Length: 231
Image 1 (cartoon, rainbow, N blue to C red):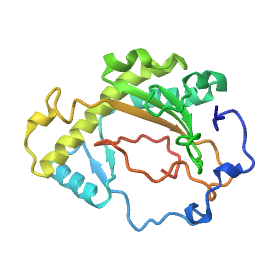
Image 2: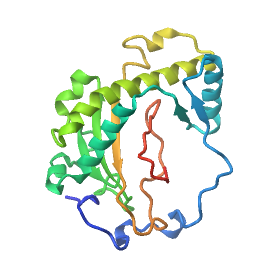
Image 3: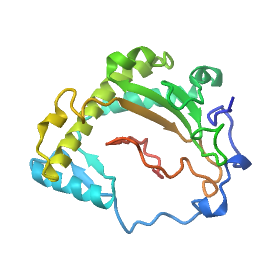
Image 4: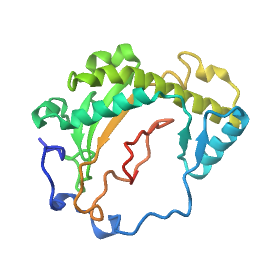
């Protein structure tokens, strides 16, 4: 069974198993600021303009920041606090959810799949099935106490934002078929799965990465960070 990074240790150096080959290391150079990540204001009153911005950002970057999205600050704060509290739990309590099976929910694991990897990445992760609520609610971890209470309002609010972004993207691409967004439609029927990533303080970030280059296998990924630079 793999030892998680969030085990209470304060790392003075990067363990050898996490040191990437030189050609894969991020190095010490600051990231380029030549291309700023696009910002889309969802609080505007011009849906055509928002749709145009989303489509342009999707084509050029595949990623953009949304502001005035309508998810309440207290809902986001409760979710972030609950996530942080989970990784502060004693190792034996987190490991109740540990699995090497990538299909298991909920699933706690370290790196990406430590037993299968030759290169290890600097993260621990809790993967949770969130929506439909009636399908996943009974699986939610009991500890920390605030996690289950935070999941439902956060998931409902963020799912609403994701569907709004999808509608705007569809509009911007000239796709007017509302059937995709009806209950049980192609863009509403899929589950909402949350990855709660935790990156322990790293003594030398030039030697390792938190996660490998990858493509998410879903239509939309909504990312909330805790203000730490590097995402």
